[in-house]
Length: 208
Length: 208
DNA sequence: TTTTATTGCTGAACAGTGTTCAGTAATTTT
DNA sequence: AAAATTACTGAACACTGTTCAGCAATAAAA
Image 1 (cartoon, each protein chain N blue to C red):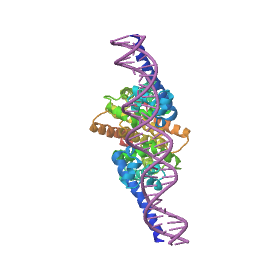
Image 2 (cartoon, chains in turn orange, green, cyan, brown):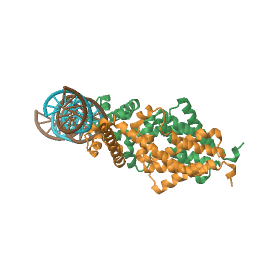
Image 3 (cartoon, protein in one colour):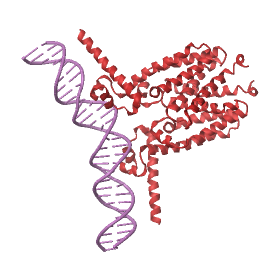
Image 4 (cartoon, rainbow over the protein chains, first blue to last red):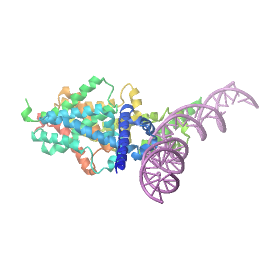
């Protein structure tokens, strides 16, 4: 059945074409400004065709959301080479924010926007759990080295996540008082250092 | 000219009527689901009438946004009675989050949603500066008491803000792994305590 | 080979959105 | 009484996501 096989591949190809066009358009124009008609023009099919491959607009965005989380995990994983857990924690924070600056549309989809929250709610387990685990492991290593109490691993992980997400979402949603980009970067890096140092300084071994 | 005066008052009254209807509708149905036509039905005028009082939908939402920030400031001010700056910091965090839980639609408008970000960008100074100042003052008091370095006031303020906003926006946008509400509350309160304690514990006077 | 069935795709249509503006009816001024 | 101003309407415009009858092109059956 070579023909049937080819047809399945053709179907997958057009689905991929839709997704690639969506990625490009959303990144360029912001997905609030991308309509199904614009998307259908880009792939040179009629609007109806998209619905033969995707249930609705949300399911396209949700697939993007899933891809985004894979890239996110990779970005965070780059911190793993650093063996010193405190340094790694700071590096993770740095990489987290860098991902957000480089992929604001992705970040919006992953952590902020409503348009995929129905799909997210339907999932049995949260797709970001792996990435969250990476952070928890680092915090856990910090506890192992005596920087924080072992009882505090969960709240500390959550705190760290909330902290970096808070920064990322405030910046992306333009809720930061209008200061120069350079000042902002310093404030952000300074805050990250402050938070990590506050943990660091508690360890008697590191007090000088 | 009593008639002209009355007319101005009438105009203001209908503007107020629109605003009050908007508040009610947005709170009940979420402002994503409130159209100008629905709003016009509620106030028993035609859709066009709204545009005689408000330039567009965004300007209604922006006025709501302004009201929200006033209520927000009041909510944070309730912490001021607490004299111990560390306790006050924790209380402020608590009040911040309580405001978010009680007014999720407001919170969205203030800190998250795009639909008023153009209006925000046009403002010369950020409307939340007063509230931010309240937080900075508390952090400053913490520095005065030796809990943190005076150099760290700015990054510490920003960190604290990012932290609570991170929690609020993750919860409101339903990006927290599906755990029981009670567990979540414990995690949040635990994280707040953890962060504040991490500052607290650094002060030699408070080490026991 | 001719007929029937299946498939992939279209694009008009539906119900909704924010917004505009010619036209109307009531009121006020001349 | 006539003219001018005002307050308001609701149809219309250009858009949105989504559906579905219908139409070619291809494949299967007769």
